[in-house]
Length: 180
Length: 180
DNA sequence: GCGCACATGTAATTGGTTACATGATTGA
DNA sequence: TCAATCATGTAACCAATTACATGTGCGC
Image (tube, protein in one colour):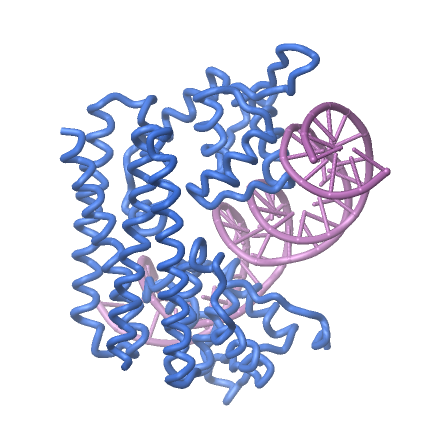
């Protein structure tokens, strides 16, 4: 009905789309997966999941399927939902993603396994790596100039930021060599 | 006025309290700091900062001070605000903080510099370290059991989680030895 | 018969985002 | 004088959190 209204899926929406894309799941099944997998910190509370599913249904990214009266209804991704999911997966990584949305990039990577081809994966990872490199250099440059003006704990916290970006970079390189 | 109503400050609220605790700042000054320091990804948009300041004023955690008619009004932390800030800084770290709220822990650490004594800092960091150790062991145990059932990319993303926790642990240990 | 896991919702509240709106001051 | 920066706000919208509410089916 609201097909033509634009929807801007949240990260949770994408996580749901990615999960049911593998196989249809009930609302409860989705909740259990979020609870147990621990991968990503998405809320599994009913007040989060069920309204999200309703939203996704409204925009026809998912649809309810009922095989028999005895089994629980499950949600399936629609063609439209699949298109939107894939578009999100392979869209170019932006500076801001690397600076503040590592979780989202990791989620994208996780779902790329079956939904992207090898070239797209490599593109994703090399772009990720390059942007990380730039970001780390910028952080380092900032640190070199400003560290003397920073309070001790601020400096140490900033160093943590650099450290963790370097870890991400290492991971990225490891995966690249793993895939090639 | 609403003194007795409980307030549950958000992370942004704490960030503001921590900043103005050092020296009074205008709303604009706070916005600039969030924009430039890059430390923590807090929104610096007017629609975020000014309502937050209004909220903090309402609960009397900050108060407006005007030195002269020419200078811009600045916000100062109140006694009440100081108490709440300190309580947050030194409260025991929970399992969940280590699992999902590293940013908050880093922010707490940054503000502890002047607001906590050496023992409190060491307690904070050793507790952080111990909880991280436990968490990493749990992740590793989960990985050992489940990795064969995980899809490749899921496994790699999970490994990223372990890696980054290990980085946090290393940082933690480094700071501990730095302080002792 | 009791408790637990399964299963699905709604309602109130609220913080954050985005966009809009306004005006002063300052330096090129 | 014109653009940029300083400076402060409001309004609409929306997703997420928390709490409440309900009901089934299974195993002990």
